[in-house]
Length: 225
Image (cartoon, rainbow, N blue to C red):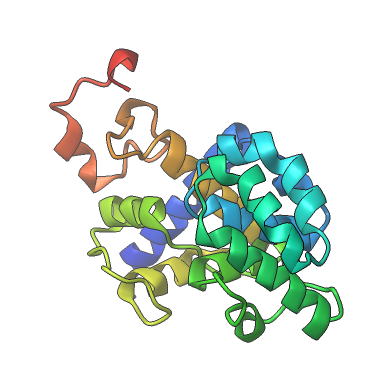
């Protein structure tokens, strides 16, 4: 990679980290010392906004922290149906039971084991590794793809895999030190600033983002957000 490319990556990471330390959102799973709590949250966060998950978080942890019998499943599905997860509730129950029976009640710390759990894909497995074990691994979802596409000009992948260009780029950006701080910052940045309709005037990348010119004709007043 050319030096200007390295500088661009470095400037991006520094700006995201600086912004993230100031604007980090507080959610209970982010401060929990338990890896299982983080896995539970990540499964529910797959299709449900963080704010809605936060309201149910204590109940979720109390229910899904131990093995669940088949007779309990209908009641649990009914209890959390407002989170709109459908099959994910069944997948999580099966995952919790598998962790108890095959991993001694401990969430596995290897990607190969996590990816075998029902409903756990590349993003969720890496989120558990990063936020639960401190591994320096990338997270790439729709929001993060949008950020990287706008700033680096890399095309979005229809399906993210470990060999996709977007994932490989994200992998080069994750710092070795405190990767969870960076990944949380990137998640929050995509939710609060670099949205579908971006808030460019409040963006920490304002002076160096090449996509800014694409949005200069938009009105960014709060009424339209």
